[in-house]
Image (cartoon, rainbow, N blue to C red; front, side, top):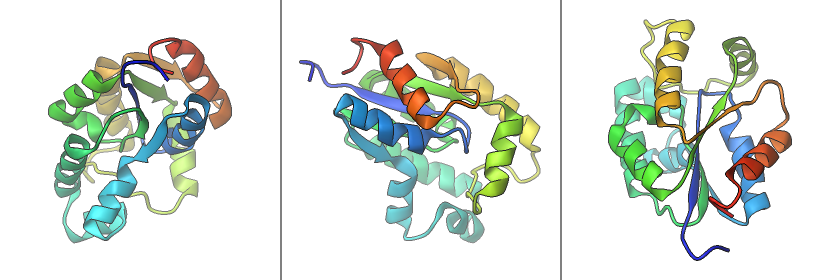
Length: 172
């Protein structure tokens, strides 16, 4: 373990593999794993989809920001929610804690993954098309990312290994 603390934050669209990759990357690096979506669900006593249904996506984004601002960030791999990039304060805090890795996946594959999964509670304007949301968020992910990784159709294991290699001595 290095002398300094380090948290690797994974950012990207829902379905890009942040949680799956995060668990594996934590095992590779010896860091603990945090999934902010799970912390949101515990805090609210509901799934992300239920939170959106009972409130709205703006509320979910506010809760997400609060969770990201309150999390203990020492020595962890953090899988953020897909809308975390809408909070400048959260992104600034995460960037101060360590590298932000954007796991980039093409929209066709994301749609396929989301379609196969149960309702995900995506914190976005329901009037906005997926393509528009993808374009809007991609610009934000790229702006905040320390490292952008084109994940293609790679396995979570391959992606975790690539992240570990690319970060080198930045984090364990």
